[in-house]
Image 1 (spheres, one colour):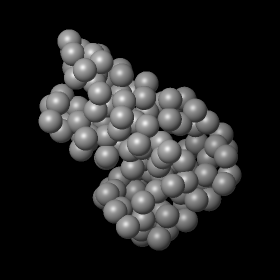
Image 2 (cartoon, helix red, strand yellow):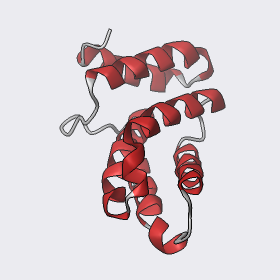
Image 3 (spheres, one colour):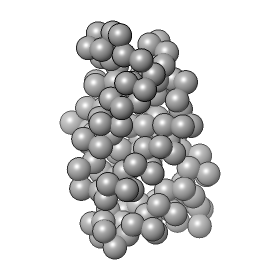
Image 4 (cartoon, helix red, strand yellow):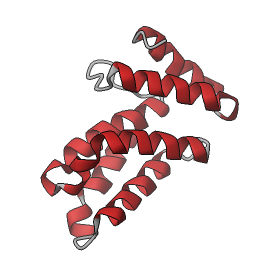
Length: 129
């Protein structure tokens, strides 16, 4: 199963599993789900990447009818770091690719080199240098 699918299932169940969750609670649950899908990444990097992509999609997390959209957008990032990015759908913008490049540059020495190479090849392919 793709990491994005695991994340999607967790997020789309929030109304049932945590019906009274406030905004901050939902953010914490999403952050935990994101980190749980990417256990090999440096903690500081996980925080930075989650915050960046969450902030760009935050309103979707608070709308029960748009949780699928939120999980798809965040899930694309999860799959990228797991080496299973959907090249055909390619939902990331050039700004997001540039952020990813900067993040990987900053944390590359603490990451698996196969992951770094995979992501940086995509960064080059997307022209986000």
